[in-house]
Amino acid sequence: MPKTMTHGRKYLETTLNSTNKQGDKIFVPYVMAGDEGLEQLIPTLKFLSESGATAIELGIPFSDPVADGPTIQEAGKRALEQNITLNSVIQLLKQEREQIVAPIIFMTYINPIFKYGIEAFIQDAKEAGVDGLIIPDLPFEQQALISEKLNEAEIALIQLVSLTSSHERIKQLGEASQGFTYAITVNGITGARSKVSQNLAEHFQQLKDSSQVPVLAGFGISTPEHVIQMSKIADGVIVGSKIIELLQQGDYDSINRLIDASKQNEPKA
Image 1: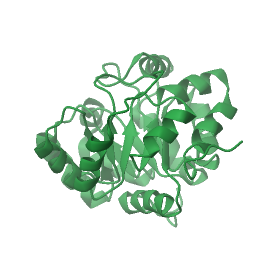
Image 2: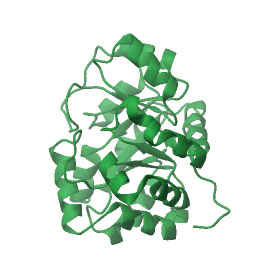
Image 3: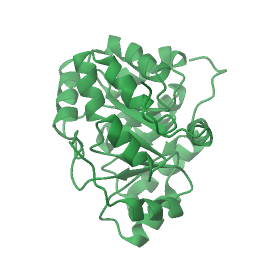
């Protein structure tokens, strides 16, 4: 990756904030690294970036996920069957990262990071142009294991907040989150749903009051209407399972419609 490229926490936060200042909402698609083969990953990331994704959440396949629903679990299995590893994804990005403008956020688990070696992982992730990190199975109280080194590398550590989090916990997580605050909109695992909850406005207002960074809604968002609905109370959305389904089907037009729905809250014709 050329040394002239600037990536990291500041790049992620600047990109997200600029999107909101323009009057648009943030749209972050999730893809599983290697689901379609490692050779297809860069073309997929380029497509999403060029189609208007604000940033991209890149899942690392893992044999024992705790937050993933059936669609993402199956994508992870397909990637593991092709021997996709954290190291192989990092090495690919080191070579090809300059082709993707959008910030990239790794979603992985703590075990692969430990196996890789925390310091080695953070150094390699920085060199690969990774801007943020989501680790759903790392408790907030244990984040000192990695947070100091991430701060030194200027990689954002993103906090997840559940619907059942207490007021005190929301404040704690909101103040600590970097890049954006990941607000889970359902009590359960990921997966496309026919509808999303209508009664989240108060919860999201509290999140916004506590967070120094944008608050994004994730889990269960699967239609342009969901994107528009959640964008009324959040700074943007994260769409995972539906993106994976559409990529499997080769339905790029529907992916574009999802992204377009985040633009000024109005889907393009």
